[in-house]
Length: 449
Ligand code: SF4
Image 1 (tube, rainbow, N blue to C red):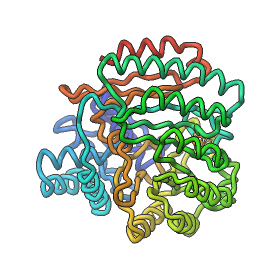
Image 2 (cartoon, rainbow, N blue to C red):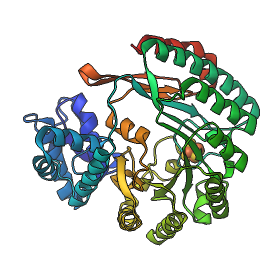
Image 3 (cartoon, protein in one colour):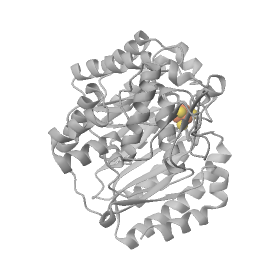
Image 4 (spheres, rainbow, N blue to C red):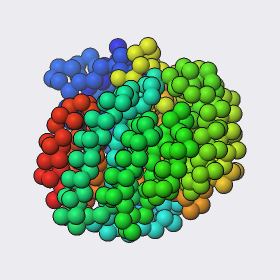
């Protein structure tokens, strides 16, 4: 067991996250307690800045394991925000020098950040403080994927009905709060879970409530996650069009049947193709497709075939995720070191994605990282010119309030004068959410200033 002594509890968390990118938690011990430094393999010095101490730890673990990390000492989820902040403060040359030399970023990741930054610069948007993103969550899916750690429950008719009744109370109250405070929805996103797992009448009620309360002439974007291809029907896609949503996301994840079976998705690659066909014939203007690198038993060639098939369908957006196996997912229960073993495979997959998507006319426009990602890589949204999602960009910038409704939804209220976000969470368990709906509303009344 490797012993690493650090200065205090606060830094133990961040340095621990960096150490976990090199080694599974079971292989090292980190402590700030007195006496621990004696006999420790590494004592991270107290002097200097936090980044100095991260560099000490990085160099030590890099020498020990023979590995380097593509994202260097960065442990946060939004490297794009750091690039943008440094760019604004110091200009491109100095920002990029710092990222390479002080943060130890690889040149590939720096190039990715640069492309994302440049694409976002072209997306001119208004920084009006009364413009908000609005999120509505449906915590149900037809089955649970093996890697899922979200708020997702197997759908039943009774549960869905009770949930929608409570959700509509919250939607109506939030709409009143927003009007009262002079806020409006600039973009609206219905996500989950899988909203299209609702039955036809329930799904129509949802669209109608969201549209009546938030879609005004000032709303620039309305998206619905159609997620699982086995929940998509012509009837639901026509409803999406009728209620004015211009964007959907269909999430194949992989086009290999064996993988879909392994991860617990109850659909076939043919159903994925037919969902795209119906969406196109219904005339949805922007379709996003999600794929995941690092899925169990997949080789780079499997991912290549899935991506090539999806590119052949010509969706406007393709999002390439890296599998994030978190506690609470069935996958990690069987294999605590999954993320470490997939690093090389994922690197090859991402490198192919970058080449193939660029050649097909897509450009990366937003990216974020999550904890416990295979190889500690990233998720990247790629878009054809003129089709980038405003909601996705603004949520990554953390410079806008996101008012979120539903079980597990996290409202982030932005205070521009202090450049600060305040979080207002809803409870994750949907049954408790239904019971405590008045508390959820009260939290927003108190938190939205
Ligand atoms: S579709 Fe998404 S939310 Fe639903 S079970 Fe799968 S990973 Fe979880």
